[in-house]
Structures are given as C-alpha cells and as structure tokens.
Image 1 (cartoon, rainbow, N blue to C red):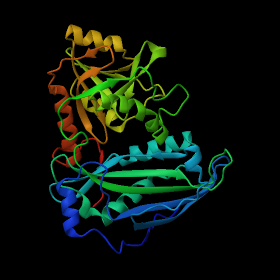
Image 2: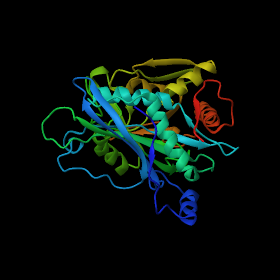
Image 3: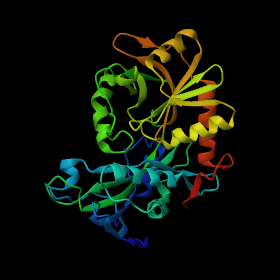
Amino acid sequence: MSTEFVKQLNPHPATDEVREAVLANPGFGQHFTDHMVCIDWQGDVQENVGRWDNARLQPYGPLSLDPSTAVLHYGQEIFEGLKAYRHADGSVWTFRPEANAARLNRSAQRLALPTLPEEVFVDAIRELVVQDQQWVPSGEGESLYLRPFMIGTEPFLGVRPSRQALFSVIASPAGNYFGSVEPVDIWLSRTYARAGTGGTGAAKCGGNYAASLVAQMEGDAHGCSQVVFLDPERDDAIEELGGMNVFFVFDDNRLVTPELTGTILEGITRDSVIQLARERGMTVEERAFTLDEWREGVRSGHLTEVFACGTAAVIAPVRRLVGNDETIGPDDAQPGEVTMSIRQQLLDIQTGRAEDTHGWLTRLV
C-alpha cells in the first residue's frame, strides 16, 4: 500500500491557552491531541488476502460503528503503546517503534486480524506526531504517549474473523504514570488469572486487560497500585502485573525476571532492561520465579530490590507485595540503587541525554 496520507486538518484545534494548560499538568491518558491517523483494511485473513488503503490524517473524534461490528461482540482488538520524547534541541524521537510494529503483528496473528507492514506503522506515527508536534511536552519525565490500535469493523454477527479492519493512532501528552517514582505496593491476586496456557497472554489485546480489572479493583481497595498474577500450575510462579513486567534484584549481581511462556507479554521495556543489565555486567536469569522465592529472598536479605517496567511507567520501584494473609517486603523500602540507575539510563537514552549505542531511537520531527 501507499503510505501517502490524505490530510483533513481539524478546523477547531485546541487554542494555545488550552494546550499550554494541558501540558502544564498532563496526567496520563486524559487529554488528546487535535488529530488521529486511520487506515482501512478489507480482505480475508483465512485466505491470506486483503488490502490496506484510505490512509488519512483526520480530526480527533468519535468513530462511527454499526451496532453489529465485530469488535463489539467478539473482542477482535489489539493495541500498542509507545512514546515520543522531545530532546533538548527541540527534535522529537520515539523509542524502538519497529519492535512495537512487530509485536502488533504478532498480536494480530493471534487475534485473527490482518498484519500491517512495519514501515506503515512507523509512517503513521510520524504523520501524527509531525502534525501535532506542539503537543509533545518538554518537562522532566514527560512525553507524548502514542496509542496505535486495530479493531475488526465488519458489521456481521457470525463467529469468524472480521473481513474489515481499522488501524488507528491517537496521542496523549503524558506525565509520570504513577505520579512519582516513590515505591508502589503490589496486590497479590489469589482469585483471578490474567491469562492461561494457549490463551492470549502474549498478545497485547484489550481482553487481557479487561480480565485484570476486577483484580486491580481488589488491589485498589487495599491501597495497591498494581496487581501481580500467579501460575498455580507451576508452584505459584510469578507471571506479570496487570500491565507491567517485573524484575528481582539480588545481592550477588543477579537480575531475575519471569520467563516468556506464552502467558506473559513480551515487553519492549523488559527487553531493553535485560540488554542494559547485561551490559553493566549483571547476570540476567529469565526463568520461573515463585512466590516462595520472593518470600525467602526478602527473609534472607538476598533479594534487595523489586521493580516493575512498562512503556507507560518506564520503571517503577516496588515496595511491598500485599496479600490477604501476608505482606512481603519492608514498610520503609526505598527505591533501590540498581532500579533507579537502570531507570535513569533508559530515560537518558530515550530523551537524548545519553548516546544511543543500540540504534533504538527513531527521529519523527
């Protein structure tokens, strides 16, 4: 397909005063830029035929969907999350967009949606950011959060893959996801599972997050910012949080994170942390890590830090694991040295304060 976008500019963009007020306190996911990108697809994924066309930049606004549209009934939906960062010279860059494009396509294959050429994914992001570049914040820890997504749009109630789809990108100025980098408490879910073997755990689809919300509500009621899920079939192995991967730092320079079993999302921040940790001489173990190991590591003092990571929060230090009948971790835990060092190293690369020796950055503007 051609990636030449037809442009329809918003006739009523936000005023400078409104935009500046938003950028002064962006929060997360509360405000959106003036435009969005959309591309349509029609075909048959079962026959491996189809075409993307009608690429366009248009005013941000509601989508018009038939009440029988596939996504509303069968959840054929996937999405991605990445950020655009303003560097000191005013240029705007994004972090590892090709990895997001590749993961989107893996998710598409799992949800029986069409794949999108990776270069089109990057072109769509660039088109939106170039147009709405005034929305990219420049404050410390701030960025423009980009949300590409794809939905099945065929109006049809039969249970089969949709023969129509929409790919779209929207953008939202963002501050720190948790409001600060203070350690957060994590709720231990004993009742609910995020995903199962053979399910959609490795896909970034809305259903996985919907399944986590009732457990997150349980965590909220106990003052916790996230929830961690276990795999009872593997001795209560730690899976991941509701929307983040998790890492464990030991006093012998080891970094342990749950292995990718098909039930855990292959986080791009997770992969980046692993690379940076190995380059600083740490031994990185991707393996099953059980609740008993977490408990014993804290008791013995060998487990010195726990942190979570994801695009939205980057890296968030974890204070305690809170359950109905136990709490693991000290009440006065502070952000760990390794946690904060890797976090700063990652942010410095993303924001241009450190050299990008990995080729992770793509310039948008």
